[in-house]
Image (cartoon, rainbow, N blue to C red; front, side, top):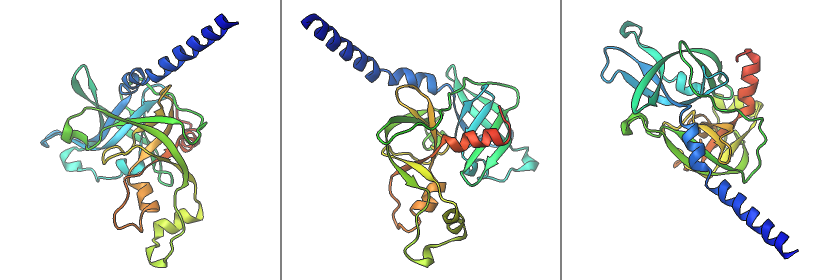
Length: 253
């Protein structure tokens, strides 16, 4: 009986140890699928302009990011400026041409299509998330200022939170807020701090790398923290169920 108990104990310790040490392996795999989203203009210096982060899904030709990242800049047609994504491969930065295939402004999601290439794809989950789940997200905080080197932050899903809350005073209301108040939905509040440039980063389960949400730096803060003179460092993320809805709506695969 004692032998069985000790065997069970060592098995539990072994499993816990493997789980605790799996994040480095998960990060190594995930970052191959994470890209910088921006624009490319041949005669500009630098040629690449960083706007946010994205990640590959499905067959590796689809890139997910935030809609506000894609819509952040009007293209300079005279300068042949085009939307592009950038990835570090074998210690070199590679540019990929893309086109927009779907945009969901309500949930701030955009789908891009790699025109002639594929990347390793991340698995998108089915929204089975609980408060307290261990998560991580990988992206490009502050973008190309620090060079194209992905950065990972880890934490937990700290709350399910409405995308917008009723304003105490009517003067805080805007057309955007009124629209969101009519059809509110829940987002994930995270206890890990994101930075400008992280918008569009994949939020994934730390144990498996399965994507559960899309990090959002601008869209959510416009709704939830509009009354604050000094917005908090809280990070929010859009659940992947809205991404799955977008994929079905446009029959994208």
